[in-house]
Image (cartoon, rainbow, N blue to C red; front, side):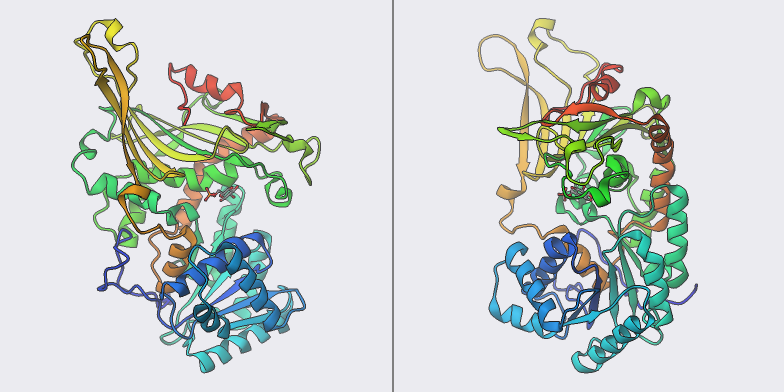
Length: 515
Ligand code: BG6
Protein backbone atom coordinates (compact mmCIF):
# COMPACT_ATOMS: atom_id res chain seq x y z
CA UNK A 1 0.00 0.00 0.00
CA UNK A 2 1.31 3.39 -0.85
CA UNK A 3 -1.37 5.77 0.29
CA UNK A 4 -0.57 8.26 2.98
CA UNK A 5 -2.36 8.54 6.27
CA UNK A 6 -2.39 12.28 6.55
CA UNK A 7 -0.12 12.01 9.60
CA UNK A 8 1.75 15.22 10.22
CA UNK A 9 4.94 15.41 8.21
CA UNK A 10 6.45 17.20 11.15
CA UNK A 11 7.55 15.11 14.06
CA UNK A 12 8.18 16.11 17.60
CA UNK A 13 10.74 15.12 20.11
CA UNK A 14 9.23 12.48 22.42
CA UNK A 15 10.91 14.31 25.27
CA UNK A 16 9.21 17.57 24.38
CA UNK A 17 8.06 19.88 27.11
CA UNK A 18 4.29 19.84 27.55
CA UNK A 19 4.38 23.61 27.90
CA UNK A 20 6.31 24.29 24.76
CA UNK A 21 3.91 26.42 22.77
CA UNK A 22 5.85 26.01 19.53
CA UNK A 23 4.80 22.40 19.19
CA UNK A 24 1.42 21.14 18.01
CA UNK A 25 0.19 20.04 21.37
CA UNK A 26 -3.53 20.22 20.80
CA UNK A 27 -5.03 17.57 18.59
CA UNK A 28 -6.61 18.90 15.41
CA UNK A 29 -10.24 18.21 14.45
CA UNK A 30 -10.79 14.51 15.02
CA UNK A 31 -12.78 11.75 16.66
CA UNK A 32 -12.17 8.35 18.19
CA UNK A 33 -14.22 5.21 17.65
CA UNK A 34 -13.83 2.78 20.50
CA UNK A 35 -14.44 -0.95 20.04
CA UNK A 36 -14.58 -2.81 23.33
CA UNK A 37 -16.34 -0.15 25.39
CA UNK A 38 -17.53 -2.61 27.98
CA UNK A 39 -14.05 -3.90 28.82
CA UNK A 40 -11.95 -3.05 31.86
CA UNK A 41 -9.33 -1.18 29.86
CA UNK A 42 -11.93 1.16 28.38
CA UNK A 43 -13.49 1.89 31.76
CA UNK A 44 -10.35 2.16 33.88
CA UNK A 45 -7.89 3.73 31.46
CA UNK A 46 -9.23 4.93 28.10
CA UNK A 47 -12.35 6.85 29.07
CA UNK A 48 -10.63 8.54 32.03
CA UNK A 49 -7.64 9.43 29.82
CA UNK A 50 -9.93 11.05 27.25
CA UNK A 51 -11.54 13.15 29.96
CA UNK A 52 -8.12 14.08 31.40
CA UNK A 53 -7.01 15.24 27.95
CA UNK A 54 -10.20 17.29 27.62
CA UNK A 55 -9.61 18.74 31.06
CA UNK A 56 -6.08 19.75 30.09
CA UNK A 57 -7.46 21.48 26.98
CA UNK A 58 -5.67 19.11 24.61
CA UNK A 59 -8.65 17.82 22.64
CA UNK A 60 -10.15 19.76 19.74
CA UNK A 61 -13.40 21.62 20.47
CA UNK A 62 -15.61 19.30 18.37
CA UNK A 63 -14.00 16.07 19.57
CA UNK A 64 -16.26 13.02 19.30
CA UNK A 65 -16.07 9.64 21.00
CA UNK A 66 -18.12 6.88 19.43
CA UNK A 67 -18.68 3.65 21.33
CA UNK A 68 -19.41 0.48 19.38
CA UNK A 69 -20.71 -2.64 21.14
CA UNK A 70 -23.36 -5.30 21.12
CA UNK A 71 -25.24 -3.82 24.10
CA UNK A 72 -28.68 -2.42 23.50
CA UNK A 73 -27.73 1.11 24.53
CA UNK A 74 -28.72 4.60 23.44
CA UNK A 75 -26.23 7.50 23.35
CA UNK A 76 -27.44 8.41 26.83
CA UNK A 77 -26.59 4.98 28.30
CA UNK A 78 -23.11 5.17 26.82
CA UNK A 79 -22.68 8.67 28.22
CA UNK A 80 -23.56 7.37 31.68
CA UNK A 81 -20.98 4.61 31.42
CA UNK A 82 -18.30 7.09 30.35
CA UNK A 83 -19.38 9.49 33.10
CA UNK A 84 -19.08 6.82 35.81
CA UNK A 85 -15.70 5.69 34.50
CA UNK A 86 -14.46 9.29 34.51
CA UNK A 87 -15.75 10.00 38.02
CA UNK A 88 -14.14 6.86 39.34
CA UNK A 89 -10.82 6.72 37.53
CA UNK A 90 -9.77 10.03 36.00
CA UNK A 91 -6.52 11.56 37.20
CA UNK A 92 -7.56 15.21 37.12
CA UNK A 93 -10.44 16.78 39.08
CA UNK A 94 -13.96 16.53 37.72
CA UNK A 95 -15.19 19.79 36.22
CA UNK A 96 -18.79 19.91 35.13
CA UNK A 97 -18.20 22.31 32.22
CA UNK A 98 -15.46 20.06 30.77
CA UNK A 99 -17.68 17.03 31.10
CA UNK A 100 -20.69 18.80 29.50
CA UNK A 101 -18.60 19.74 26.47
CA UNK A 102 -17.17 16.24 26.14
CA UNK A 103 -20.61 14.65 26.57
CA UNK A 104 -21.96 16.58 23.57
CA UNK A 105 -19.64 14.54 21.35
CA UNK A 106 -20.51 11.08 22.73
CA UNK A 107 -22.36 8.68 20.42
CA UNK A 108 -23.15 4.99 20.60
CA UNK A 109 -23.60 2.54 17.75
CA UNK A 110 -25.12 -0.80 18.61
CA UNK A 111 -23.81 -3.65 16.51
CA UNK A 112 -21.80 -6.81 16.06
CA UNK A 113 -18.48 -7.24 14.29
CA UNK A 114 -19.74 -9.58 11.58
CA UNK A 115 -22.77 -7.52 10.64
CA UNK A 116 -22.36 -5.28 7.58
CA UNK A 117 -25.30 -3.13 8.51
CA UNK A 118 -23.81 -2.29 11.93
CA UNK A 119 -20.71 -0.91 10.21
CA UNK A 120 -22.80 0.99 7.68
CA UNK A 121 -24.55 2.64 10.63
CA UNK A 122 -21.14 3.39 12.15
CA UNK A 123 -20.03 4.97 8.88
CA UNK A 124 -23.21 7.08 8.81
CA UNK A 125 -22.62 8.16 12.41
CA UNK A 126 -19.04 9.18 11.64
CA UNK A 127 -20.18 11.15 8.57
CA UNK A 128 -22.79 12.94 10.68
CA UNK A 129 -20.17 13.87 13.24
CA UNK A 130 -17.99 15.29 10.48
CA UNK A 131 -20.84 17.53 9.42
CA UNK A 132 -22.18 18.40 12.87
CA UNK A 133 -19.05 18.68 14.97
CA UNK A 134 -16.35 19.36 12.43
CA UNK A 135 -14.34 16.19 13.00
CA UNK A 136 -13.38 16.70 9.34
CA UNK A 137 -13.13 13.05 8.41
CA UNK A 138 -10.23 12.41 10.80
CA UNK A 139 -10.88 9.31 12.88
CA UNK A 140 -8.94 6.80 14.92
CA UNK A 141 -10.35 3.32 15.51
CA UNK A 142 -9.30 1.85 18.83
CA UNK A 143 -9.54 -1.96 18.86
CA UNK A 144 -9.69 -2.77 22.56
CA UNK A 145 -11.02 -6.21 21.67
CA UNK A 146 -9.65 -9.77 21.54
CA UNK A 147 -7.17 -10.20 18.66
CA UNK A 148 -9.35 -12.97 17.23
CA UNK A 149 -11.79 -10.19 16.27
CA UNK A 150 -9.15 -7.97 14.55
CA UNK A 151 -9.48 -9.53 11.09
CA UNK A 152 -13.28 -9.16 11.01
CA UNK A 153 -13.21 -5.59 12.29
CA UNK A 154 -10.41 -4.55 9.90
CA UNK A 155 -12.31 -6.04 6.97
CA UNK A 156 -15.50 -4.29 8.03
CA UNK A 157 -13.71 -0.96 8.36
CA UNK A 158 -12.39 -1.45 4.86
CA UNK A 159 -15.69 -2.63 3.35
CA UNK A 160 -17.70 0.23 4.86
CA UNK A 161 -15.19 2.81 3.61
CA UNK A 162 -14.24 3.76 7.17
CA UNK A 163 -10.57 3.00 6.53
CA UNK A 164 -10.43 5.28 3.46
CA UNK A 165 -8.36 8.38 3.98
CA UNK A 166 -8.75 9.97 0.60
CA UNK A 167 -8.19 13.66 0.36
CA UNK A 168 -6.74 15.46 3.32
CA UNK A 169 -8.27 13.31 6.00
CA UNK A 170 -6.60 10.64 8.09
CA UNK A 171 -7.77 7.28 9.39
CA UNK A 172 -5.72 5.41 11.99
CA UNK A 173 -6.08 2.14 13.82
CA UNK A 174 -4.96 1.57 17.39
CA UNK A 175 -4.39 -1.98 18.55
CA UNK A 176 -3.77 -3.42 21.97
CA UNK A 177 -1.62 -6.42 22.71
CA UNK A 178 -1.38 -9.37 22.50
CA UNK A 179 0.07 -8.84 19.01
CA UNK A 180 -0.12 -12.55 18.26
CA UNK A 181 1.11 -15.40 20.47
CA UNK A 182 4.31 -16.22 18.58
CA UNK A 183 6.27 -14.99 15.58
CA UNK A 184 4.10 -16.78 13.05
CA UNK A 185 0.78 -15.51 14.39
CA UNK A 186 2.22 -12.00 14.81
CA UNK A 187 3.20 -11.98 11.12
CA UNK A 188 -0.26 -13.13 10.16
CA UNK A 189 -1.86 -10.47 12.31
CA UNK A 190 0.39 -7.74 10.96
CA UNK A 191 -0.48 -8.90 7.45
CA UNK A 192 -4.20 -8.65 8.12
CA UNK A 193 -3.96 -5.20 9.67
CA UNK A 194 -1.55 -3.91 7.01
CA UNK A 195 -3.87 -5.11 4.25
CA UNK A 196 -6.30 -2.46 5.37
CA UNK A 197 -4.15 0.19 7.07
CA UNK A 198 -0.66 1.14 5.89
CA UNK A 199 1.97 0.74 8.58
CA UNK A 200 2.15 4.46 9.31
CA UNK A 201 -1.57 4.42 10.19
CA UNK A 202 -1.14 1.56 12.70
CA UNK A 203 -0.55 2.53 16.33
CA UNK A 204 0.31 -0.48 18.50
CA UNK A 205 -0.06 0.33 22.15
CA UNK A 206 2.67 -0.65 24.58
CA UNK A 207 1.59 1.49 27.50
CA UNK A 208 5.04 1.28 29.10
CA UNK A 209 6.34 3.58 26.38
CA UNK A 210 3.79 6.17 27.49
CA UNK A 211 5.23 6.29 31.00
CA UNK A 212 7.28 9.37 31.86
CA UNK A 213 9.93 7.34 33.62
CA UNK A 214 10.45 5.18 30.55
CA UNK A 215 10.87 8.22 28.33
CA UNK A 216 13.26 9.56 30.93
CA UNK A 217 15.63 6.72 30.06
CA UNK A 218 16.30 8.58 26.83
CA UNK A 219 16.94 11.83 28.68
CA UNK A 220 19.14 10.15 31.24
CA UNK A 221 21.26 8.45 28.62
CA UNK A 222 21.43 11.03 25.87
CA UNK A 223 21.15 14.39 27.63
CA UNK A 224 23.98 13.75 30.09
CA UNK A 225 27.71 13.32 29.79
CA UNK A 226 27.90 11.37 33.01
CA UNK A 227 26.50 7.96 32.10
CA UNK A 228 27.08 7.31 28.42
CA UNK A 229 30.89 6.82 28.61
CA UNK A 230 30.40 3.95 31.09
CA UNK A 231 27.27 2.50 29.45
CA UNK A 232 29.02 -0.47 27.87
CA UNK A 233 30.66 -3.84 28.39
CA UNK A 234 33.88 -2.26 29.72
CA UNK A 235 32.08 -1.01 32.80
CA UNK A 236 28.71 -2.73 33.07
CA UNK A 237 28.65 -6.16 34.69
CA UNK A 238 25.01 -6.92 33.94
CA UNK A 239 21.56 -5.36 33.68
CA UNK A 240 18.46 -6.45 35.59
CA UNK A 241 15.05 -5.43 34.32
CA UNK A 242 12.27 -6.26 36.74
CA UNK A 243 8.53 -5.83 36.56
CA UNK A 244 7.09 -7.31 39.73
CA UNK A 245 3.45 -7.16 40.69
CA UNK A 246 1.80 -8.04 43.98
CA UNK A 247 -1.62 -8.63 42.40
CA UNK A 248 -2.78 -12.01 41.12
CA UNK A 249 -4.70 -12.77 37.94
CA UNK A 250 -8.05 -13.67 39.49
CA UNK A 251 -10.84 -12.42 37.20
CA UNK A 252 -8.59 -12.38 34.11
CA UNK A 253 -8.58 -16.08 33.30
CA UNK A 254 -10.18 -15.52 29.89
CA UNK A 255 -7.18 -13.51 28.79
CA UNK A 256 -4.35 -14.85 30.91
CA UNK A 257 -4.75 -18.63 30.98
CA UNK A 258 -2.56 -20.08 28.26
CA UNK A 259 -0.87 -16.69 27.71
CA UNK A 260 1.33 -16.41 30.79
CA UNK A 261 3.91 -13.95 32.04
CA UNK A 262 6.40 -14.16 29.16
CA UNK A 263 3.86 -13.33 26.46
CA UNK A 264 1.96 -10.87 28.62
CA UNK A 265 4.90 -8.76 29.78
CA UNK A 266 8.33 -9.83 28.50
CA UNK A 267 7.44 -9.88 24.80
CA UNK A 268 6.35 -6.26 24.92
CA UNK A 269 7.09 -4.14 28.00
CA UNK A 270 10.38 -5.72 29.08
CA UNK A 271 11.92 -6.11 25.65
CA UNK A 272 11.02 -2.50 24.92
CA UNK A 273 12.78 -1.48 28.14
CA UNK A 274 15.77 -3.55 27.08
CA UNK A 275 15.78 -1.85 23.68
CA UNK A 276 15.73 1.64 25.22
CA UNK A 277 18.46 0.70 27.68
CA UNK A 278 20.76 -0.93 25.15
CA UNK A 279 20.20 0.96 21.89
CA UNK A 280 22.66 3.38 20.35
CA UNK A 281 21.99 7.12 20.34
CA UNK A 282 19.48 7.88 17.58
CA UNK A 283 20.54 10.40 14.96
CA UNK A 284 17.43 12.37 15.87
CA UNK A 285 14.21 11.78 17.75
CA UNK A 286 12.19 11.44 14.58
CA UNK A 287 9.93 8.38 14.76
CA UNK A 288 12.01 6.72 12.06
CA UNK A 289 15.39 7.32 13.66
CA UNK A 290 14.28 6.38 17.15
CA UNK A 291 12.55 3.19 16.07
CA UNK A 292 15.39 2.26 13.74
CA UNK A 293 17.77 2.13 16.72
CA UNK A 294 15.37 -0.06 18.66
CA UNK A 295 15.06 -2.36 15.66
CA UNK A 296 18.84 -2.64 15.38
CA UNK A 297 19.31 -3.57 19.00
CA UNK A 298 16.42 -6.05 19.01
CA UNK A 299 17.90 -7.65 15.89
CA UNK A 300 21.14 -8.15 17.82
CA UNK A 301 19.39 -9.65 20.85
CA UNK A 302 18.81 -13.32 21.58
CA UNK A 303 18.32 -15.67 24.50
CA UNK A 304 21.56 -16.71 26.16
CA UNK A 305 22.26 -20.43 25.75
CA UNK A 306 21.69 -23.01 27.08
CA UNK A 307 18.15 -21.88 27.77
CA UNK A 308 17.67 -24.69 30.32
CA UNK A 309 20.03 -22.76 32.56
CA UNK A 310 19.33 -19.16 31.56
CA UNK A 311 15.55 -19.10 31.89
CA UNK A 312 13.10 -19.92 34.66
CA UNK A 313 9.36 -19.91 35.13
CA UNK A 314 6.92 -20.44 37.95
CA UNK A 315 3.29 -20.36 38.97
CA UNK A 316 2.11 -18.89 42.25
CA UNK A 317 0.66 -21.21 44.85
CA UNK A 318 -1.37 -20.10 47.85
CA UNK A 319 0.50 -17.85 50.26
CA UNK A 320 0.45 -14.54 52.07
CA UNK A 321 0.47 -11.07 50.61
CA UNK A 322 1.37 -9.04 53.68
CA UNK A 323 -1.24 -10.07 56.23
CA UNK A 324 -3.75 -11.32 53.63
CA UNK A 325 -3.96 -14.97 52.77
CA UNK A 326 -4.30 -15.43 48.99
CA UNK A 327 -5.15 -18.29 46.66
CA UNK A 328 -2.88 -20.03 44.22
CA UNK A 329 -3.44 -19.59 40.50
CA UNK A 330 -5.09 -22.96 40.12
CA UNK A 331 -7.72 -21.99 42.68
CA UNK A 332 -8.42 -18.60 41.08
CA UNK A 333 -11.79 -18.19 39.42
CA UNK A 334 -11.82 -19.38 35.83
CA UNK A 335 -8.47 -21.22 35.90
CA UNK A 336 -8.47 -25.01 35.53
CA UNK A 337 -7.03 -26.82 38.57
CA UNK A 338 -4.29 -28.21 36.33
CA UNK A 339 -3.43 -24.92 34.58
CA UNK A 340 0.21 -24.85 33.45
CA UNK A 341 0.21 -21.11 32.77
CA UNK A 342 3.31 -19.41 34.17
CA UNK A 343 2.82 -16.35 36.34
CA UNK A 344 6.57 -15.79 36.71
CA UNK A 345 9.12 -15.74 33.93
CA UNK A 346 12.79 -14.89 33.88
CA UNK A 347 15.08 -14.93 30.87
CA UNK A 348 18.67 -14.01 30.11
CA UNK A 349 19.32 -12.08 26.92
CA UNK A 350 22.56 -11.25 25.23
CA UNK A 351 22.94 -8.26 23.01
CA UNK A 352 25.45 -9.15 20.35
CA UNK A 353 27.04 -5.80 19.68
CA UNK A 354 30.45 -4.40 20.46
CA UNK A 355 28.91 -2.24 23.18
CA UNK A 356 27.29 -5.15 25.04
CA UNK A 357 29.33 -8.25 24.23
CA UNK A 358 29.36 -10.53 27.29
CA UNK A 359 26.93 -8.45 29.36
CA UNK A 360 23.88 -10.47 30.40
CA UNK A 361 20.50 -8.72 30.47
CA UNK A 362 18.30 -10.48 33.02
CA UNK A 363 14.60 -9.87 32.55
CA UNK A 364 11.99 -11.03 35.05
CA UNK A 365 8.34 -10.49 35.70
CA UNK A 366 5.82 -12.07 38.00
CA UNK A 367 2.46 -11.83 39.67
CA UNK A 368 1.95 -12.15 43.42
CA UNK A 369 5.55 -11.28 44.17
CA UNK A 370 6.84 -9.53 47.29
CA UNK A 371 5.82 -6.07 46.11
CA UNK A 372 4.91 -3.99 43.08
CA UNK A 373 7.97 -2.51 41.45
CA UNK A 374 9.30 -1.94 37.95
CA UNK A 375 12.94 -0.98 37.62
CA UNK A 376 15.96 -1.14 35.38
CA UNK A 377 19.17 -1.74 37.30
CA UNK A 378 22.46 -1.24 35.52
CA UNK A 379 25.00 -2.99 37.74
CA UNK A 380 28.62 -1.98 37.24
CA UNK A 381 31.78 -4.05 37.53
CA UNK A 382 33.80 -3.89 40.68
CA UNK A 383 36.69 -1.44 40.73
CA UNK A 384 39.73 -3.24 39.28
CA UNK A 385 41.71 -2.55 42.44
CA UNK A 386 40.70 -1.64 45.99
CA UNK A 387 43.44 -0.01 48.06
CA UNK A 388 41.76 -1.11 51.30
CA UNK A 389 42.06 -4.12 53.57
CA UNK A 390 39.43 -6.65 52.74
CA UNK A 391 37.75 -6.14 56.12
CA UNK A 392 37.18 -2.47 55.25
CA UNK A 393 35.11 -3.27 52.20
CA UNK A 394 33.10 -6.27 53.35
CA UNK A 395 29.89 -4.25 53.10
CA UNK A 396 30.69 -2.83 49.70
CA UNK A 397 28.61 -4.05 46.77
CA UNK A 398 28.75 -3.14 43.10
CA UNK A 399 27.89 0.34 41.89
CA UNK A 400 24.44 0.45 40.36
CA UNK A 401 22.25 2.93 38.57
CA UNK A 402 18.62 2.09 39.09
CA UNK A 403 15.82 3.68 37.09
CA UNK A 404 12.63 3.21 39.11
CA UNK A 405 9.81 3.13 36.59
CA UNK A 406 7.18 2.73 39.31
CA UNK A 407 6.21 3.31 42.05
CA UNK A 408 8.29 6.10 43.70
CA UNK A 409 9.38 7.10 40.20
CA UNK A 410 12.99 8.24 40.12
CA UNK A 411 16.62 7.28 39.74
CA UNK A 412 19.01 5.94 42.37
CA UNK A 413 22.77 5.70 42.21
CA UNK A 414 24.49 3.25 44.55
CA UNK A 415 28.12 3.74 45.43
CA UNK A 416 30.56 3.13 48.27
CA UNK A 417 31.12 5.71 50.97
CA UNK A 418 33.21 5.95 54.10
CA UNK A 419 31.37 5.16 57.27
CA UNK A 420 31.93 8.08 59.68
CA UNK A 421 34.47 7.30 62.39
CA UNK A 422 38.18 7.03 62.87
CA UNK A 423 38.50 3.77 60.90
CA UNK A 424 38.22 3.34 57.12
CA UNK A 425 35.14 1.26 56.55
CA UNK A 426 33.44 1.58 53.16
CA UNK A 427 29.81 0.75 52.72
CA UNK A 428 27.11 1.19 50.04
CA UNK A 429 25.01 4.34 50.12
CA UNK A 430 22.45 5.66 47.66
CA UNK A 431 21.85 9.00 46.02
CA UNK A 432 18.26 9.46 45.10
CA UNK A 433 16.31 11.53 42.63
CA UNK A 434 12.51 11.34 43.00
CA UNK A 435 10.03 12.81 40.55
CA UNK A 436 7.66 13.60 43.41
CA UNK A 437 10.14 15.95 45.06
CA UNK A 438 12.01 17.32 42.02
CA UNK A 439 8.97 18.37 40.00
CA UNK A 440 5.76 20.01 41.06
CA UNK A 441 3.58 18.87 38.15
CA UNK A 442 2.17 15.35 38.25
CA UNK A 443 3.00 13.02 35.37
CA UNK A 444 0.20 12.31 32.90
CA UNK A 445 -1.05 8.76 32.72
CA UNK A 446 0.55 6.67 29.97
CA UNK A 447 -2.76 6.40 28.11
CA UNK A 448 -3.22 10.17 28.09
CA UNK A 449 0.08 10.59 26.35
CA UNK A 450 -0.48 7.75 23.91
CA UNK A 451 -4.05 8.69 22.96
CA UNK A 452 -2.98 12.24 22.32
CA UNK A 453 -0.10 11.02 20.16
CA UNK A 454 -2.53 8.93 18.10
CA UNK A 455 -4.64 12.02 17.43
CA UNK A 456 -1.54 14.08 16.67
CA UNK A 457 -0.16 11.38 14.37
CA UNK A 458 3.05 11.02 16.37
CA UNK A 459 4.18 7.40 16.15
CA UNK A 460 7.49 7.53 18.07
CA UNK A 461 6.15 5.80 21.16
CA UNK A 462 4.43 2.96 19.31
CA UNK A 463 6.30 -0.24 18.39
CA UNK A 464 6.41 -1.06 14.69
CA UNK A 465 5.48 -4.43 13.18
CA UNK A 466 9.20 -5.18 12.86
CA UNK A 467 9.81 -4.56 16.57
CA UNK A 468 6.89 -6.80 17.48
CA UNK A 469 8.12 -9.59 15.23
CA UNK A 470 11.72 -9.29 16.47
CA UNK A 471 10.52 -9.56 20.05
CA UNK A 472 8.68 -12.78 19.25
CA UNK A 473 11.75 -14.09 17.50
CA UNK A 474 13.73 -13.59 20.71
CA UNK A 475 11.11 -15.22 22.92
CA UNK A 476 9.78 -18.06 20.76
CA UNK A 477 12.44 -20.69 21.66
CA UNK A 478 11.72 -20.48 25.37
CA UNK A 479 7.96 -20.36 24.93
CA UNK A 480 8.12 -23.48 22.76
CA UNK A 481 10.31 -25.22 25.31
CA UNK A 482 7.93 -24.42 28.17
CA UNK A 483 5.02 -25.58 26.10
CA UNK A 484 6.73 -28.93 25.55
CA UNK A 485 7.63 -29.31 29.21
CA UNK A 486 4.23 -28.73 30.80
CA UNK A 487 4.03 -27.72 34.45
CA UNK A 488 6.05 -24.75 35.70
CA UNK A 489 7.77 -24.66 39.10
CA UNK A 490 5.73 -23.39 41.97
CA UNK A 491 6.34 -20.46 44.32
CA UNK A 492 4.36 -19.24 47.29
CA UNK A 493 2.45 -16.01 46.76
CA UNK A 494 4.24 -13.09 48.41
CA UNK A 495 7.73 -14.46 47.69
CA UNK A 496 10.15 -13.51 44.90
CA UNK A 497 9.52 -16.40 42.54
CA UNK A 498 10.64 -20.03 42.25
CA UNK A 499 14.07 -21.24 43.45
CA UNK A 500 14.98 -21.93 39.80
CA UNK A 501 14.92 -18.16 39.22
CA UNK A 502 17.50 -17.60 41.95
CA UNK A 503 19.59 -20.48 40.63
CA UNK A 504 19.68 -18.82 37.23
CA UNK A 505 21.73 -15.92 38.59
CA UNK A 506 23.58 -17.82 41.30
CA UNK A 507 25.12 -19.97 38.61
CA UNK A 508 26.97 -16.90 37.44
CA UNK A 509 27.86 -15.68 40.93
CA UNK A 510 25.23 -12.95 40.87
CA UNK A 511 21.92 -12.46 42.62
CA UNK A 512 18.64 -10.69 41.95
CA UNK A 513 18.11 -7.37 43.58
CA UNK A 514 15.44 -7.32 46.27
CA UNK A 515 13.81 -4.04 45.34
C1 BG6 B 1 -0.41 -5.11 31.22
C2 BG6 B 1 -0.45 -6.60 31.53
O1 BG6 B 1 0.13 -4.90 29.95
O2 BG6 B 1 0.36 -4.44 32.18
C3 BG6 B 1 -0.96 -6.83 32.93
O3 BG6 B 1 -1.32 -7.24 30.61
C4 BG6 B 1 -0.20 -6.01 33.94
O4 BG6 B 1 -0.89 -8.22 33.27
C5 BG6 B 1 -0.15 -4.54 33.50
O5 BG6 B 1 -0.84 -6.13 35.20
C6 BG6 B 1 0.72 -3.73 34.42
O6 BG6 B 1 0.67 -2.39 34.05
P1 BG6 B 1 1.23 -1.27 35.03
O7 BG6 B 1 1.15 -0.02 34.24
O8 BG6 B 1 0.32 -1.30 36.23
O9 BG6 B 1 2.62 -1.68 35.40
